Each structure stands twice: as C-alpha cells, then as structure tokens.
Image (cartoon, rainbow over all chains, first blue to last red; front, side):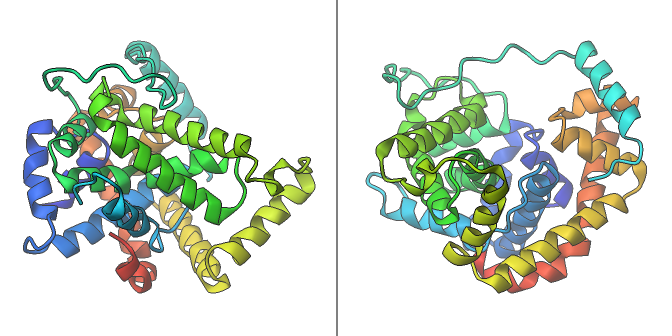
Length: 76
Length: 240
C-alpha cells in the first residue's frame, strides 16, 4: 500500500471501491498494519495542522476509541 | 503561515471556484432534531466518507475508527470555539463521536459525514454551555485575559508542560517544512487544506492534470512527514 493512496484516501479522493483494500491493510493484526497506521496518522496530523488545527494526538484518538469500546451497542 | 505567492493563489482559487462551483450543500444533520426513519435500503455513496459510513453501519469497526482518526481534531476545534478548558473539550469531543455513532444509521446523506459531525459537535458544545456545568465558561469574556486563561488551562488541566513544549516545537518544524516545499507542492497543499478545494478544482486552477495534483500533494506531505517524523517517535504508542 503506497502513501499516495493514503494521501488520496484522507482527501476523500480515493475511489470508494478501493477503500476495502485499504481497510483490510489497516486492520489490526494485518501484516504491516501498525506501520501503515503510523504513516496515516502522521499524514492526517499534517493535513489538520496545515488546515489550522494544530493539535498533537497524544492519546486523544485512542481515548475516544476506548470510550466507544465501552459505549452501549458499539461493535468495538 | 506565509505563502510566497499568496495573491496569485487566491486569484486562481477564486477562478477555479467560479469555473467549478461546489454543489449546493444538503442541510446538515441536526442531532437535536427528531430523527427520520432509517432508509429501508442502504443509500448509494460516492465518496470515501460515504463508504466509511456505510461500512461502519454494517458493523466494520475499523471504518468508524478511521472517521475518528480523520475528524477528531476538526470536531475538537469546533468545540474549542466556545469551550476553553482542554479537558472538557476532550470530553465533549468524545460525546460528539458517541452521538455520531448512535445516529449513524439515520444519516441520510452519507457522503456528508463531516458537515453532520460538525453540527453534532456544535450542538454538544451548546448543550454544555446551557447546562450550568460551566460556571467558568459563563464568566464575562475579557479578550486580553482569554488567551492567558486558555494557555494556563492547557498546561494545568490537560497535558504536561513537556508535552506542550514538544507540541510547539513540532508545529514550528511543520510550518518550516511547509515553507521549504517547492512552490507547486506548497500551492497545491494550501489550496487543498486552506481553501478546501478538491483535486479537480486545484488542477483547473493550476492548469495541471488531476493525477499531477494528486502526486504534488502526496510528495509535499511526504516531505513534511520526513521532516517531523523524528519528533513524533516518542508519541507513537499514544497514536492509533
């Protein structure tokens, strides 16, 4: 999975029929998924910062997802 | 952020907007409004976000995780417009995503997830301000004191001084990296992130093929990532 695909994905410019392959590659436990997630989150941080939202993650996303895990009805 | 060729970019952006006007916006979802009945069949989607919403509704957790990754800062920024305390902003951002998760099956236009989430975020913040839990935020606004209080609260209620310093250094490095990009890469990225133009509109503005714009934006981001990646290593375990 090359980073140009990640970049287009974050810009909402990846054809929807290519999203499935990316999700599969990002899935927890997929080979190389941790490194792919790292590249994706760095690219998203850059996007947000250039757009004016300068905020490091520092666990923010993980805390949202942790709360979703305990949220009623969530399939996490 | 300084744009070396700022004026020409703005003019070109305006021209592209005229040539390729955005489609009329659908009314954003309102989390406080009565929910319409869920559609009996899954609506067709034409975007990445629409695809993610559809997959999240079908039970693919990773699809909703990606929506969180994509929009957590923007949702927090919406809430931060009216709420000062960083810890409360985080809690309200979590609330907004909980409401989004619950309301996802009722989202009529799945391609417009962000406008819908933005409305939810604003509603969550407004509800908080109305709730009476926020005596500090009811104080009269003193513009001079406001920035001092915000800075103080960032240090005291959310994140360590070391984290704040690291963040400041990170974003200074990021801005330097943007400034050091070749002009076409920088212009393409700024048109995408500041003006919110899609690749087709950027291509029309710059007089380039869409695939070239896609490549310029990617290469620009890749160069910025290379510049800041060493500074992000200490926080890797705290990111998705």
